[in-house]
Image (tube, one colour):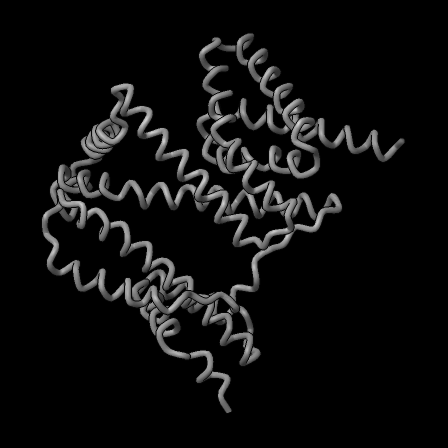
Length: 309
């Protein structure tokens, strides 16, 4: 009986955390942190409860948010907060179902990221269908932000501000992927720790020293680098693909390089501080070196050479 009571109190606490996080979106200084943590209490509740009970707890949380917001502010703010919460519900379902099946962390993060990314794309399409061009609004916001910068900063820009904004808008897919992945990773990290403490067994990622990319990515990277020399039309679809693909592949190979450095430190029994210092120095002075090392580690059996006797 006491265990059931404690469990109910714990779930009510997570419901209260959902309410507090939703209300804190209205606080400018903490809203960005709130967005990253918004799915955590929902995910904990979804794993601990069956779907029907979860929906009951969730509906109660939304009702509380609506009542509190309507009393303190105005009704449309309450509707906006509820819409934000519902937006993050599908990734919660996807990640929670993966947790319940005992799936590895890679599957959980992939499912959550793809779901969140699909919702972002759908939101763009829906807004465009209703005559709201979010990309143009983003361009206008960026131009206004640049115009408000001090003159010396504007003069230090490497290209014309209109061209800079145009290229930045072409990189919207990369931003969306990065934001989706970051939010899901933070959610998985926090939810896993909380669920494991409550008696669940949620799998984590393998040690970073064991991470490896598929060799086919090297060919994609080489082809993209080669094509970059010939694509100059900034309005073409191929330019948009390349400007998003190259940074993404560079990041993946940088992660591969970090994995190799930790593998090397583990095999040689070096202090973990050494690879960390090497990574920091590379990021500060020559970040391309990390990507290059990752390419070599993927294309050639560097780890086999290290372990060969």
